Length: 354
Figure (cartoon, rainbow, N blue to C red):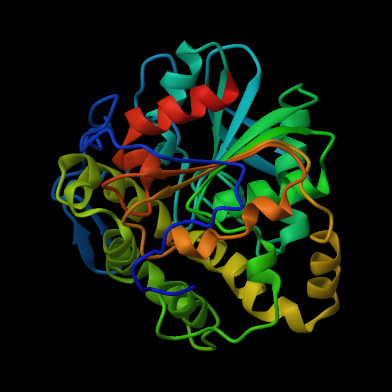
């Protein structure tokens, strides 16, 4: 993907919109309540992270109406945060993320009559962190298994970044279980599955190159209390959100998560699979699976200032979708539109879901 300014999105998409309402800079539900911080913050690896609590990742973030539980799916345990009743919307976080990245959408979707569920994916947050199982097939089976474990036959998937790529993969591999897909700042997985070498000069290529390093990238990601994760997230966020108290609260929780044993491995292993699989049999099978056009309706969102996944890099996605495809640009935000402009994302998602 190029790090140049994004071009205008291609005109072959069936519906395109530029949401011109100014982007919100604060959270829709206020700052995260993360329990009582330990004196001086959390110390890890000899580094103190100011304001971080040593308490549980799964229960200390208080959002009214949101409850927590664990489910077993595809052979491991997943932590879920959920609110509301109605059709299931399962939310999938991106690289280095946890369920709190959906803190705005959980109450919004519940209030609109949906069963909103935000998952800690394999290797993240309060979910199990096995050493293996981070290939596209296993991760898609995780998501399909969570839908079944929640007692549902179908779900809408709402994914950000790599969570959006996972939503696309799951919808292609398990079409009978996926009602629709909302992908935020996420390319169609065929673009990641093609034979290519990581390009060090673009942000995506640099992250892939880092993930594939033979010497301790997991340790480096978790070092200094997750300082590298904060640099990555901050560099891809819009400037208004990156300077806000909401960003500080959010990244504190992400840093607290990434230093737990196995979490850095869980964040990087899917990217290592992207780098290595194209030359192996599982990569070939993945490209074969992606030849099937996605039949579920798709809402594709991207931040106007997203330099990690610029709008121009998403050109042609509509041609890979057999069903309804809608493309929208969220103005004034970077890679994390759901957190940077929650009101605009809520309006777009609810309009799409009808």
